[in-house]
Length: 512
Image 1 (tube, rainbow, N blue to C red):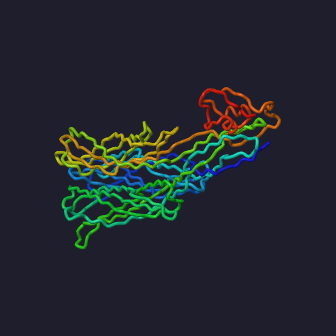
Image 2 (image 1 turned 45 degrees about the vertical axis):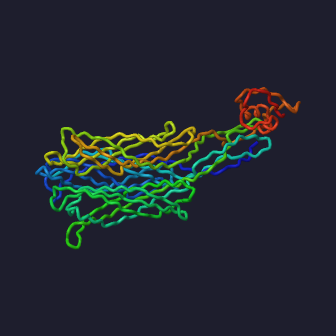
Image 3 (image 1 turned 30 degrees about the vertical axis):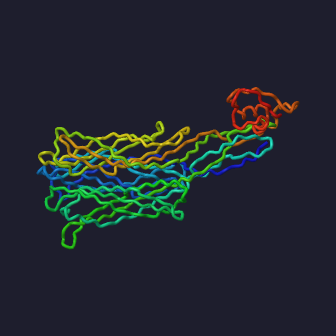
């Protein structure tokens, strides 16, 4: 005999793909005519950016560009030069199934880059970077929340989880003309430029999400007064954008990620012909995921007072995003440059970083590392380049009661690095922006199907209205009721009990 099962919809996210695809960098380039000959290479780096994301059936397509920059000393050995080369890339990923309602979370990771000068005007460059993607689809599954039948007893449990309300991704332009202050010389050539986007506020408005933030722009350039004299400038460019495509409401936890998808900066003359302006053309990619708090009731066990049952179970893990952490901390570190000597720092920045987070003793503890890239001049005023790795640890107080299992997904951005030159090195202060998605996980076995075997009726003692049972502390009322073919509510009512378990050793009256 089959029972009527009542089911409840469960809207959650299913990971269809979480991996990476390596892209090679193989270049044999000649210096442009305006670049002087190479004496010594100081630094080579590749900067990949994803500019397009698309899902077609079971295929994910990611396209973008990568820019290779080479810093070197010219024939005189005292002037820093830079040459660059840009190329495009395309990555195609096949999913395990077609994705109709899915979102792509993607980023790039530099694996390695090697560069050597085969002649004073030719460069041989080999390296690789990875295009990393995580594809999450919104799936609406069903769970059994009730069983219809007079003789059926069922154990139900209400569990909190995060409903995946929606996600969206949107790319938008940011254009600005920036002016050098009067205290700074004009710009002859831009050697290096970096941009970092930070979120300041987000708010749900009529089902959309308004995001506000700023882009911190740092520019290293050579002066028009002397090409060997290098200057740096920093700017903060505010922005606001309305994101559409999700179901954003006030009760949702909205996770927003910002990425610089493109950056072009050119030196621009003022009305007098002086090179005092920077024309900035940038593209920002903003993506948001909305997690809505929800509850679902599931049947975890059942028995019949009349027949033996054939029950099918499934293991179900419910995840709840309980908090989105955003921390900012200053990491101080001393970097020794003994034997090198340092008179001036031209630029200091970060390129590589990694972080993990985990719950430990009531805290969310971040552990990670980042590199510090230093472009400086030695005591003879000759440019040199070096880099160091810095380890860090940071603890965020987390007063929540520890559930069965906590999972953290973390991110790290190095927003800026300041420095002070010491006798044989430098002291740095790095501003770390730490983010973590704190997820609680509850895994339980639930009923997926159930059937009564009418050929196997249960034996019940109907000769008396009550039976006496001597219970031990901690015994489950459910197990006792199942053994006597009665109900938990009947045992509670007869013995004036309230909980799920027997509190102390003693006699129970079992209604038959």
